[in-house]
Image (cartoon, rainbow, N blue to C red):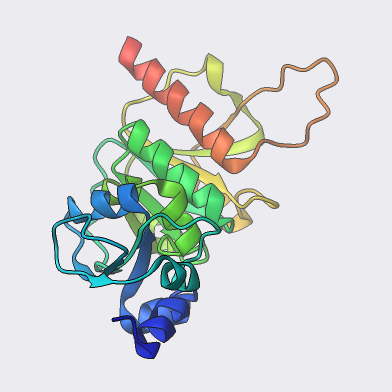
Length: 241
């Protein structure tokens, strides 16, 4: 039975302070929940309109599901999972760092891109949007189970990092003309302001995605779009070597 306390808890998890307080986050939909059930994430509680997953659950009606869902068209179930503690950051290979990325959709897409391109570590500044925000979780479509996301003091992390540090800038070197390594850190910045000045000083190689339009009037690329292009070029570059 869905109780008032259940409703209060689930709806509170839209806010980061309550996710931190309860150490819980929300996953919605059959596919997303199944991805998390098949991962190392620990299930706290499951609410569903039917016995879909073969685990203990609280049966609810479609009307109750709509009441607690963050989606306009909820899909059969909603689950609460425990938030894991920060994992050890493995610096071997290629990693991505985000400097103050604020849009949940962008972060969710970037996590999916990291999963697609085999990037196992995503390092986020403490100012970057929470990866357990319901909109982020939904946008990852399960990729959050396969990409380790850690929040750190980005200045300290990069200062201790011992490999090449790439930063994306409008005035950087053309990425298509570079010999790109199989190891390193790629930094992408805030949607409006790009990479912050203090992080910029730690970058060892500035790169850019050139504009090809006749007018070259577009100011910048969406940060998630830029991530996809950059990761594709890095992977293509060292795969061919």
